Length: 591
Image (cartoon, rainbow, N blue to C red; front, side, top):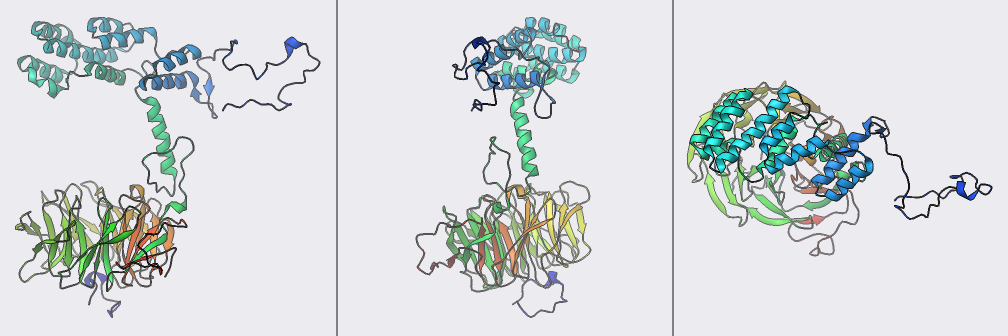
């Protein structure tokens, strides 16, 4: 790329100019000499024919490890059947297994609660055999609901009697009792205290289930919780977990292979006339924006077949375009010229809506606040400006920074502004309190990238390492991982989070490769070849974990997908495999 001295700090170089029956004869003993009455049963007997069978002991253990109690297992299944509405199946399972879901006293108690027999349910509650503190807590829930229903029906005197003679003597939740007293004077406070009328008795029963020991009353959706926990364990143990679907199959253990990582060039986008410095997918994953030294930015549209095509070419800047930033709803996009102006564009029409500039100063970075209306820009005098929806500057402030703001990020809650302070220091500024925290590196910071949840910061440093910092609390930021292997000697190289739950880290490199690491372990898992120049920036599609983009000094943007043959080709391709809109189709890692 340009002739710049290799010793120059990169922060100052912003890109210059069945069931199966066994029929094996060995399964049964020899029977030809035995009397007919002693022969084994005929496997062809109709399934379900009457026969005696032993009832398993309720404390029998099952499972390959032998630590699952049969009665608990059966009760949880029975509970799931009832919860799913399979009343008959749940009843049959209770009868056939000989294991009841609940003791008769619990069944009576549940029935009384659902029928609104509050006095009867209190009497039954004392017969269950619970500890006194549990009885008091459960009684409070029941009597509180009795109180609400009496007030709802206009029985104010009975409600007051319940409050004074039944609830208060329990001597629990005194602040809540005080709030209940206020309901007598102002019934409208019902909703504030959680009484909504509809299905309230069902919610009372659910609340009681949270109070009772689970051995007495099986918690709702317990089977679903156990299955979800098992799936989460499998997912967490899946080293290459990069899954596009929202659900995991129960029929087999979940496992992603390396082939789930995008590693194959599916398209080469070559509509730019010079080095491509920056790319970013839109939040909905339907667009990709690229910024170039040729002073233009391009909005690419991701079509239904996964191929990208030019939607708009944005012209108007007089200097190279350093970066882009999407609005939260992706209806607008910002482009920033190098120490020039920031422009606001309409995504749909490609029309320039507004130009932000300051007399005698250049703008160096830009970003949207989460409200999608206000924007922030870095200024060449080392300050920030906040602009309102009408394009007017509504705030301007200087932090203790000593470098021009070349990188800028805002957390998803709009509270924290992340920017460069000194060459080795990143500043975390609370927008409301103006309180500042810092990340101090041991060497020059060249770029950084914020995670989607705003809790982690990916920092590229002078030596070529990438550092992962946790910034998700008000305490001191903490360094939790380092990623190594790629090359960075002279230029600004940008990295990104990506994949399912942002479980991977991708980065460009000066050796023309794209590098991918496992975020949790720091292991380098893939290098992608194809570019013929420095890879300046990468962006992972936030809604499609199988799509990665990279921008290079070779004037192109490459789209990477899964390593699958026979990728569907667009109908508008010419015979030589290229399109007139600056797109080349690829069948592999072509160079």
